[in-house]
Length: 204
Image (cartoon, rainbow, N blue to C red; front, top):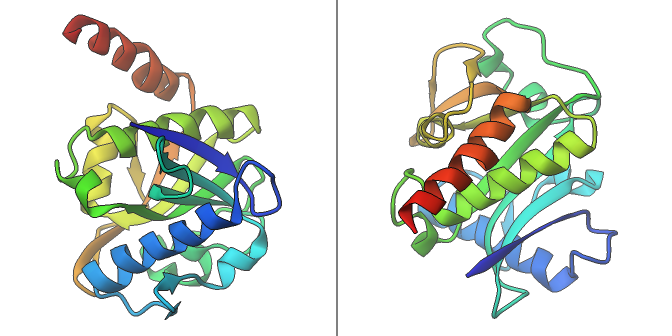
């Protein structure tokens, strides 16, 4: 069992021990498993975007509340963010979004045992996406942009969400990488909460 916590480093609901565990999870995901060239120290991965008071979506173990099982980082596109400042080639000549109603989701990571179903409808990623949708809509966000693997793109599409690529996928390191727009709208709400709840009840 897990629960989802959404907050910022300065918020009380996000303990520093859980944040440290999240950085450790990111080290395992990006440095050890994907062999990315990332800033890592003492088994923790963090970059300068983490200094911008981002919002984190963290899945944690219900029985071990300071152990991160999954994470995502949210930043508004009105400031620095990864698609614009690190991976502009994925824009394929399009202008980088700069709008308070558009946020970027980056640094998607899940613990190794949590992605055992590859990118099917695994409980932890789905739970994070569902809670992220509710949070951003409450905060006036209409769209998420993200730089991600084609595997995570497949997960998002398997959930029935609408996606739009900025352009073709590009090989970055060992990962086929793509930049996406994902509307956070009534359609997404229905797919993530209405239809998933209905299907879960049918399977019960």
